[in-house]
Length: 125
Image: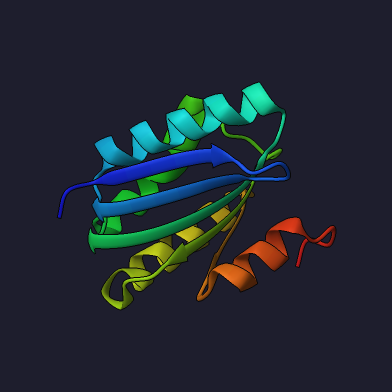
């Protein structure tokens, strides 16, 4: 599947749509663009919706914290992610666990509605 990426400012959050094959090069491009838009708009709430035909490898989860540091994604960011492909949701959840263990405010959800609700709430739960 051809990769598609859309990153937009929605007024109170950044919305990411990411379809296709995932690898660390794609992740670096995605998060670099997200970080630029977040800085430009002074908005650090990110809602991501993915449909991954080929997910990242499990070991790539450990690279994510380094990638975040390299790009400048820090504790200001709150990321709600939805993976729509069942075969990729375990990897998304594993990345979430690795990032949470390192102090990042990232969560994976089953639906976009759940993700948006958590993202825009004032309580970090």
